[in-house]
Length: 430
Image (cartoon, rainbow, N blue to C red; front, top):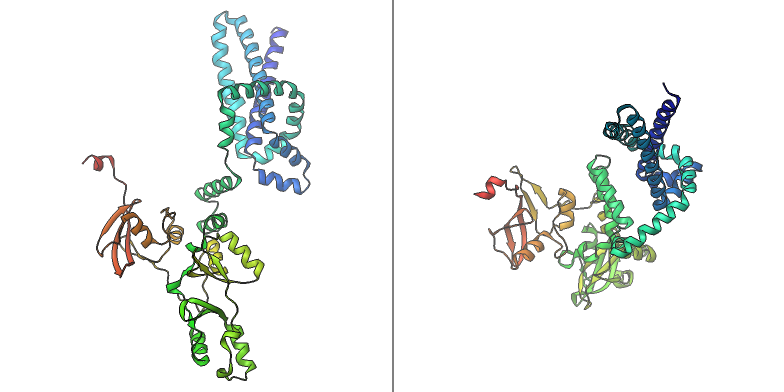
């Protein structure tokens, strides 16, 4: 065999290996988890530091790899064409096209990229030193190419629009959480807690507060013995006191403060000044988001606040526990009254109390009912119906059937929810 032919074949093999290296490196460096690389960097891994720098200059990295990959692929194809023309004449061009396409596709693209996708972090750490050298050597050419590309993008207005559509870090994390949940890497409870943290800044206290009609309050003008009896019978540790009218809150009575006062008076409850024992009430706007409210709780060393609207009218109350439940789910102790409000029926439907919040229903049943216009499930029905429905009325929206089962005055207190099966094409035509 001719020496030049042997050299050409060896050169083609080497170029295919280089092409495989470029393809695998590109996939590994773009698929490597940045959080994992950052963790290795903090542990002092030098290769991880190199990977971090390469990923940080992503445009230059991709440009260098693509430039190198195209150079070796074109050169390998040219050598193969030259060799096969020597054997088959002009028909060698067609043979070279078929053979090199198959070799590059299998051995220089699919195979190395598959390996890199299965082991992205370890592959990225392995190729990083060599890729760094290639990026350095090809930097002048890459910078020239990037300049030309940017000019073209500006001419067509693409670059400006692209920057406006980049997702935030929060959206990226949310997408990763959904992805790992779908793949089984994260269970539903863990997903709810992780997304609950991000939702704190999007949820206002008015959406999770205990409404004023459900708040336990005590008339401050009642005898001390009566107030102490109501406090002892209550499952709550903090109870608002009102005077004159229920919305006029004059203090918040803490069980520990009350017990301390009883002890100081030697058990004589009639001698206790209830209003002096109570703490000054703290009022917060209903538009405060949960992240701000939690920070305020921490700053004031308090766990309890009264919620008012823009006119100063009492709307309800919110506690630190209410906010924590938005992250970890319901927290119950031995004194809590277990009222879930959602009961699954044998036919697959759900009996739901009207006061159940849409957020809790979505979280428990993994639904996606909108909660922008209403807080409770009863409020959603009223919003969609644009009226206060009568008992027995049925509505269909958001792929659910809503049947009103019970109503008290103007308040819907119980509903039956049924998930509607999607119609098939045949059913839709009937």
